[in-house]
Image (cartoon, rainbow, N blue to C red; front, top):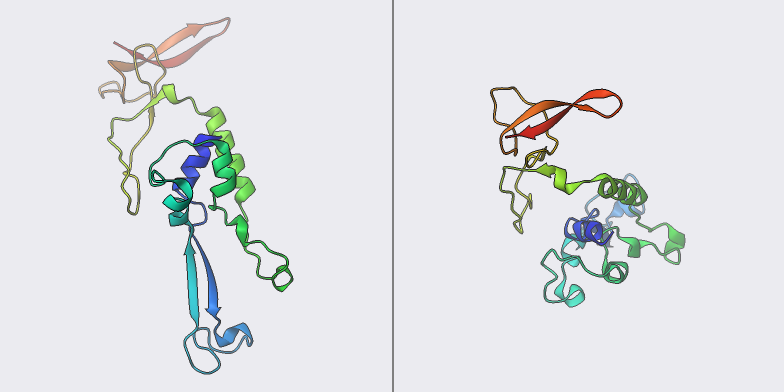
Amino acid sequence: GAFFYESIRFFAPVVGLPWWTTPPARAEDDAASQYNTAAGVAGVRTILNLALANKDPNMWGEDGHLFRVRPHAEYASHFVGFADFALDDDVAGGKMNRACPAKSLALAMGKAFFTAWEQEEWCTKDSPGYTEATPFVDPFTLVRGVVEGRRCSPRWPWEESECCRGTCRPEIVIQGVPYVEWACRA
């Protein structure tokens, strides 16, 4: 769980939370200006940057900018990536509440992924890296098959296989019922 929360701390599901500090005339009249107030002055919109807040050294410590799995209690008390703090039924009867509509779905998908993920069965020949800029991470391709005897994805016989040492060839495995399994071969 903590590894998943560290991942979403670094790549916040809700990146920003906008609100008007000086609302435009449209706030009171649907036909009015979307940009200017009734007096013709531009409305002022502020956006709280949650992506940066999740790396704030005042909250996360001097290593808040580093990917480091932390105790679950820290995520429970400091994580703002779903903008949970933007729910307050005492403000305008709850009409100003902002909620991440897919929070439960995102957490369920992350849990399912990390439950099924078998890291040792995957590899990449790419050299991905992390940079503090958009798009954050270099592209890379994960493929099955790492070392002799491990599973792999079939490719054309004349091509080198993903990350296998050797080639990716079919093997007939008999465990009561014969079937073909692709495996790395020297």
